[in-house]
Length: 340
Image (tube, rainbow, N blue to C red; front, side, top):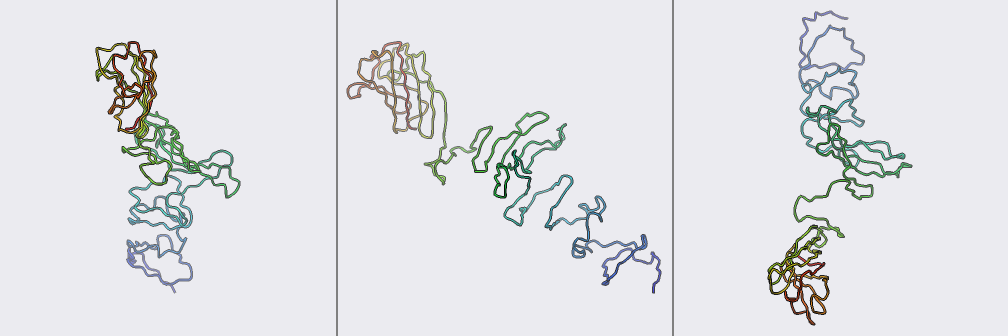
């Protein structure tokens, strides 16, 4: 038995629909029933698994206005997008996987002869000021297979880091800066390793961060020394020196060519060392020419404290060389180490 009813007698809104249990199909005539389902009346519990797919949704039919603030996607398969996947706002939780690993997971074919990259993390900018290649590709982090695949045991993978320098032009090409090899070696291809905090360094020969194994200071440079008598500088045509400081040890070289005493008198010293000595061990090699300038069998150099070196003579090397021992046009060459 059936009865026809006018559409006008049907309520335009079904606030709380309760459908009977049906074993057959329900057929509707287009335009016969016009209803509106109340907000939140239907949720995921009202759909059978797989009952809604993309063929049942018009383009752009579901937008942010139709979705709650929180959207949870539970899937054991892949999520595929034909365009870019944009995440607006912060990701408050880690993206987890069922296997060991956290994060974004990308794969590619293994190396079959040439190095091959996996999909990586790509950085760019879509700033409107870019008039070419928008968005602009500016940096890249990617895995790189390192061995030819012959079986599941061939899984060598390195990690490469690429960046674009300032003023790279309208078609920048990111440059390889650093690589972490499959065995763990780190190669810096361009640039320097800079510590942002003073006193930090590289721990060598130890598995814990201890001061005794930390190389925290290295410096190279030049210094200007001066031959002096009684603390007063004499004139040298040449007095150029170099130094290398590694940790608390300084290596120095210098050569001086004495041309005038400048009326200076007293004990002879070499002043102007690049760093103040700390009273530790020091050792120097000394040469001078002409050899008969100083009338003594042996001359040695020793630290006198601060930033000066004294010259000693005598059988016991206990007598300080004096200005009267020198003649003009004298070459003095010295190299050695001391601690700071």
